[in-house]
Length: 479
Image (cartoon, rainbow, N blue to C red; front, side, top):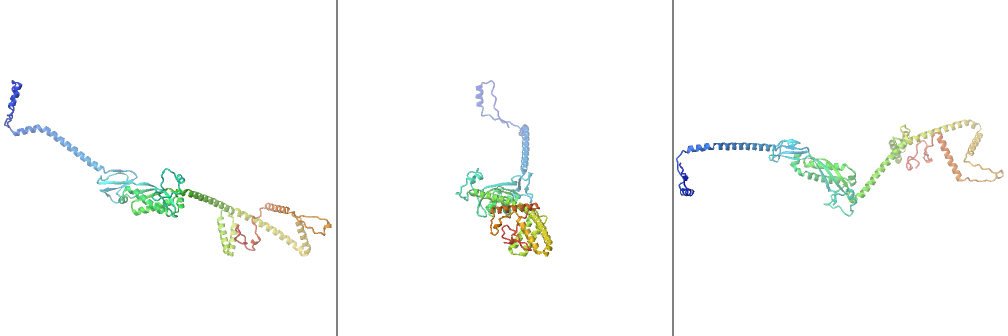
């Protein structure tokens, strides 16, 4: 194939002539020439080989880079299934939204966990232990949250009623109202049941609903006084009721502890109730003090074994009230024998020792009088009148020799007159008091005082007991 080429302008021509010549020859611009097509292609191939090689190398490099990128993406995709589970977090494995794994294997544990990447697989996690505070459900509305309990009580208006829907409260067993603030700790022990029944973000709402129901049911079993005084029992009952309800729902939640943060009566009556509680506490203190004093008195009366003595005395009083004389006599004898045992101490032991000493003194005195009467028996048989006269004179001498006897002397000329002389009552009383004091001193000097009790004539029984055992004297013999 030949191609016509334009002729070159003559160098000898001027510029304008060359331009006009070139313009006049533009119609003949193609010249046909003959040649080989295969040789031309070979020449072009030879000319294009370096470029083709560069392009091929570039394409091969790009393909390898693309393979590496795809491999990296695949590795990244699979590595993205690895997740680190922190401590205190639990959950389950899911594949396309369904729980994956056998029973027990679907629950994830803390640490690095391999699994299918999203969206094939996913870890559904939640906090294992959670805390929930319920402060407004059973608490009255307060415009100023910073008010303390005492300040709210002092500023409470007795004419302002509690409004349902605005003020929280709960009804007690005796029909009173109470206010509570609570805190509950719970754990997710079965995340499979938890996530199949409800979602993780609804656990607080479920626990709060169950808590409110348990509080209403539990407080309805306690009076207001019991609710305020019993610190632990109401919280334990609330926890038990909550756990029962959650077990019935089968949501895998375990209640750890329920704490009643605040409990109070309505603010308007809290002041009066507080005064009543203070008086009740004072009563308990006084009662305990009285019991301690009574115990000290009983120990001081009979020693550590006072309970046994009190039981015997109680049985004796019951038998007396029932009119069972034989049983009463047996019990009184048993009480006397028990009092003489060596383990009985205190005032009773001291009185018994004094009584025994007094008894010994009486026995010795009676023995002395018996010996004296025995010695006078022979004289009386020989001359009874003389002995009686002698004894009479001795009795008169002893009587006249006492300090209480007043002797008056009168002239013989007045012997035929009857003279009546009356002593001064003050002097007679002073003499009696001095005599009683002298006898007490004498009794103390011979080894002990006289017993602190005296039997009346109506209380003395021959061959049987008959002493009153109560201070009032309305039970026992000699009423």
